[in-house]
Image (cartoon, rainbow, N blue to C red; front, side):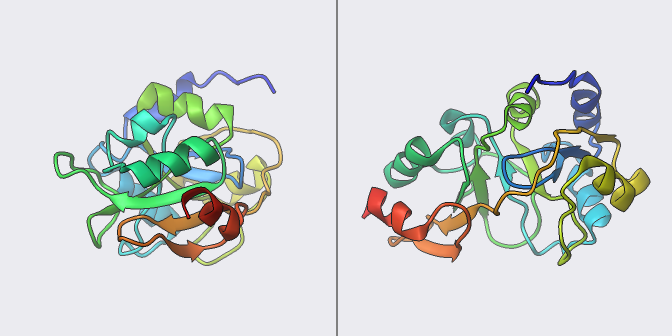
Length: 196
């Protein structure tokens, strides 16, 4: 697939607006979490409680390390499963202020296996992203359906064809033992097989 012209999306993200992006799992709504007010717009568009923290998409392991404390175990998982469907919850770096919701000082990071999403992360920086649905409801598989769902609450919709993969697997890497938060497209036994 040819990467579309992303200039409009990049400009919208840098302005703190909500953009719909394709990923390797489902369509997502994304903002730049370092622009004041951006995540507030995303929470409002999605009708998501602000105490449910937003995961963050990144382009590389090194980019993940700019926002999270990436230890050796997390780096091993990233190098094995990224780009792909594994989200790793880690402590937020103490020297940054990222807007991704209320709650504890953690962030879920993932590098998607989708070139459009990765180009945006490469160009704009880490993106707070969550599924393009209203909180608790199903995510539409096409860009047109997502546009109809959100209307004027989103500034740009990038059409990446049908996006209807399984959700990412979410693991918590904050404690001494890795913990499964949600099993998705990466089987838990494969995660354990990599880090024991």
